[in-house]
Image (cartoon, rainbow, N blue to C red; front, side):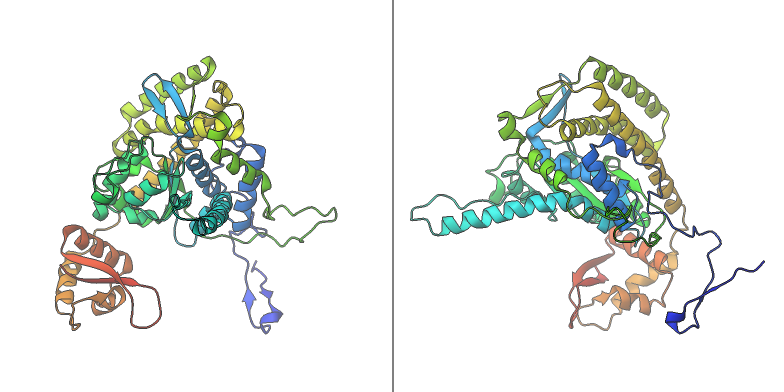
Length: 466
């Protein structure tokens, strides 16, 4: 029996919409991916992440995971977790949202960063007031007040060192394709940051600075077809990233709901516009040193039951690592560090005023539950990586032709825009074209740089023969 179309009179009565055979007539605003264990979070935080995810129509994990990383960066070096005498972990999380264009990576990160934005705005207001007072102070005067920066988009280590002089930790928010293997210097310098190794630069303008326990969170998105470039290099960079994988770019709008129901409460998918409790939470995280008066920071230790839960999970994970292949083995070997960091962050956001007590088993079980969630996400990401890796290799003819087209460029400086080069090559398939460009850049055959066009518009990539 044929489906009956819906006629839309407000579009002239000529547009007919047939129902999609596989579509839900009332698309859900709930998490379409594997359930994130949202009950591991305090109730106020649960409400914020669920509401935000519903309002922008993304999986809850795409908001919750970055939020945990941002909380860890605010905690910074104020709190550590001693798993054993020689094993100390700090709240460093690197989160990768792996999803195609249009799947909501940037809106999810922005929603998760909102309490950090509010904290940063408070710091900005305070700095402006102090700076005005400083400008009008009689000479000689003290050093100018320093802005406390809780997050940045600057990848340079020198900028991070300057920021870490004023705050316990910093969050770096950038698209992760900035860490492709051809930009190896950034990658190499960041590897030690994941392990919170001391920063003691030798460059002249930064040689007088030292950060003993740097805490730098990294949060960003990446499209699935770019994953091979993060996996390249065999340096362990990819295994440091905790992935949240979403393979469906369709973000259906929820069924129409009234702004207010009969009782005057917000509808199920209405975002929480004023999450005051989470603002107070982040403000408290930023001032833990003042609360505990511990210049070197608070060191948590697990109680007996928590340690037994950790040991049982750790040994089981190690058994899995022994038989895991390739990248999966690397991920499994780093998963205990992640779980310990989860435990630290969860204990602080649940009990920030009780950090003089041992870390209990309930927190360790929550951390393990979160670790198992990410184990599933790791498998999903590696499946995606395998699918991308099994796509046909770019044609040798195209790799041969690109340098010749660039060499024959009519432009005096030899540069061609990405679009113009694509046209001169006869518009080959874009996926194959992108793969060839990356291959030539890695080989050093071609070079690229962003250049601003003559008229209005953002910079775009231009290429020429190296």
